[in-house]
Image 1 (tube, each protein chain N blue to C red):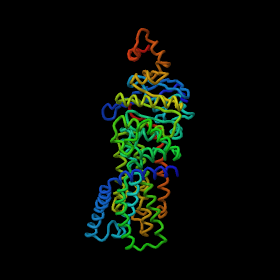
Image 2 (cartoon, chains in turn yellow, green):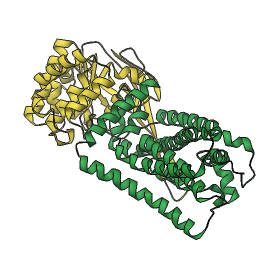
Image 3 (cartoon, rainbow over the protein chains, first blue to last red):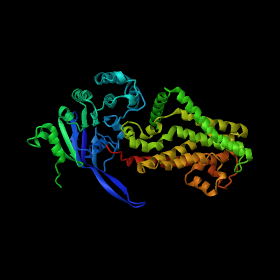
Image 4 (cartoon, rainbow over the protein chains, first blue to last red):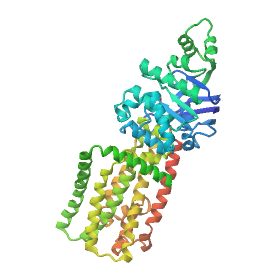
Length: 258
Length: 265
């Protein structure tokens, strides 16, 4: 469902030194990244801040083009076929909404129905279903800017699933949520994956997400994949440690062999 | 293309509905822009209180040039004026959100917060043009050019806005550059170009083709000799100028989008 082959992305930064002189520096956000995600998998994508998680997500969704390597998502090259791909995947950014800030949630959903060309009847059923499981009924008429973070996140997740995508990509979907909202989001994602077979890839800093949801964990550090396997295998990489927090801390802080 | 127009209308209708929830504010903004831009006409009236001709053009002729330029500019602003806000959207992360939708980010940008109240300016320019035309009695052999020149003007201004937007993919902090040409161009073309120097007129004819918004086709409609002695056939070149600038703008936008770098997080 997702294929990433030897992908790298670098950014050229320019520093001003005086009026005309400047110097350029190349930063490799991601380098030589390769992995595959099969249909129906639930994958957690971990990594310290600045490791390249969001850059990877942006390349998978076609927002950024990779500098090197090849990517295929749902059978398409994301950066070349971005708009076609948009109909096949759902994307959620935890840090900011993809909904229309000043419009009532309901209007955002109707707009999405038109943009994604979802059949009216299919949309009505799907929305009723999502309203039910995500408990959106109480705030459908409120403008998005007036929603609480938990409500907004549920709205964002519903919006990403109205067109019933085969792949759902979430960038920190549980960030800033209280325990109740967090567990509502987790339950929903687990059921979505189990019942509909939707492939899910999520990035997170919350190891609870990983323990409760993900059968497979990928850990990115300094732009390359540092670990890829099950949660049990992850625990086994640091013998003697019993909590996932400690294991991940050890993996984040160890020095990479140069 | 049809798909893009469909998306535009869809989003514009949604934004208008959102704004219509505040009817008083909508009415006041429309009236406000009508009155504010009306001051431009007051300025022209003041000039003609002291003289009978401006750059070799009579009052109705100047009003004709003002009206056609004003309509092109106001309609282009209404439809595409948002394109030069790219930097804001990139910084706020809303541009990323546009990129994950199955719709052209150009259309989404252009229509963002579409506000119908900007129509006030168009109405004001249309009123001035109507008054000018009653005074001028242009025969239909030359009047056919009027709708064509307004459309070409819209395309020219929209293309300049798009070029300005495309430049912001590379120069995140320079939206003012485009404003010099759009708002500057809007003001420049309100008056007969004969009040400016010859070098400036040659520049806006052959480099930034603002002379094709209303000056060259206007000379045809008014059957007026060119004060700068440029060839007669230039008067029919507005569609060519509009189309070439639009193509250049389209290519620049695509090139910019390929170089898009997003922001952190």
